[in-house]
Amino acid sequence: MENKEKKYNAVITGLGMFKPEKILDNHQLEQMVDTNDEWIVSRTGIKERRIYDQGPTSEMAIKAAEDLIATTNLDPKEIDLIIVPTVTPDMLFPSTAAIVQEAIGAVNAWGFDLNAACSSFLFALQTARSMIEVGQYKKIVIIGADKMSSITDYTDRNTCILFGDLAAAVLLEPTTDKSLGIQDSLLHIDGSGKDSLYMLGGGSLNPPTHETVDKKMHYIYQDGKTVFKFAVKGMADISVEIMEKNGLKSEDIAYLVPHQANKRIMDATAQRMKLEPEKVMLNIHKYGNTTSATIPSCLTEYYRAGKVKKGDKLILSAFGAGFTWGAIYLTWGMD
Ligand code: COA
Figure 1 (cartoon, rainbow, N blue to C red):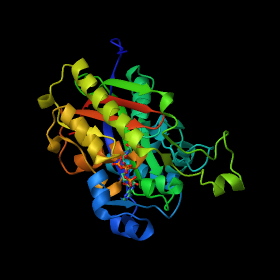
Figure 2 (cartoon, rainbow, N blue to C red):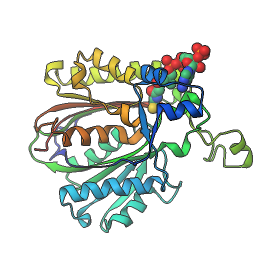
Figure 3 (cartoon, rainbow, N blue to C red):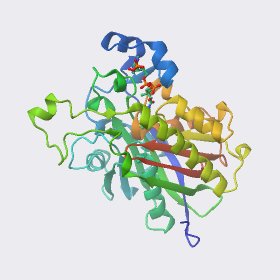
Figure 4 (tube, rainbow, N blue to C red):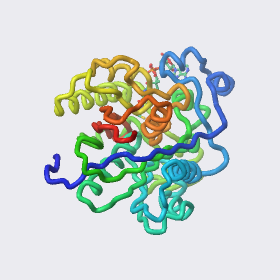
């Protein structure tokens, strides 16, 4: 429900990104499992992905936050809250946010990690937005960071072709200009999808043992066909719903910013929204599915390439394990 009494709109005022140097391309994967470049590109749109083999997720998150700080002249002491959407935290606790907080010197911040699988970034954006709109906080940093290689089985061709490592950050601040920033959001969770995409081991259900390791329970499992079916419908329906709810026509929208899980899912969503392919932000060919980093990395790359202008209307849209899914409609506020 929208709060008509809100004091401010929440607007993205800064961006940052870290991409690991190491590339794992489709031809290298051909040497590891029974697959081929043509199959991967035609079924997913992925050509290569990045692998971070230097350290944990927090290191990538810190580098993305440092990039944001350097490009916005943000004083880390002014940060009120750090949210790290991730499914690959360094440890179950302390949170990745705590490790980032210390490293960047955000001495006045509080923070937490947030896990809604591939919808984590959208859920974090909505969480932060609600705190900004009521005037509670002024500077919230959200860092979508995932080292998917740490939970990927590189002998399983069904999953290892899909995922990669990446981190990207946004700064969210209040504005009194209600024409800018986040305008609306629609988010959902439905646990009936829990058996289609999961990692069984490592939590309280299956604490780590030799057996959980032997049975490969610390890796992602996905029933690709089922997830694909629900993802196409979930992302397309929610994206059209948020357009209709806000009286938006396809010509009003500058970009769809979809979670990058599979190019065919993005194409189907764009088609339902009647958007031309140029209006779909895309970086899956370079990075694969990087879970929490897909949407903020698209925003960072397209903005830095001069392709997004102040006033542009964007629809951010995602689908992930749970199932979780949703869409956020915002007006771009950076010059
Ligand atoms: N290389 C070559 N062949 C492969 C392969 C690979 N990497 N992976 C699977 N195959 C084979 C399968 O074994 C199957 O062979 P069979 O017909 O002999 O049984 C065939 O290719 C088709 O497999 P299928 O699973 O039907 O392919 P698909 O078109 O559904 O594509 C995914 C598979 C994973 C790309 C797709 O299902 C997908 O993207 N799912 C959703 C992912 C997603 O959105 N996740 C969301 C949350 S993050």
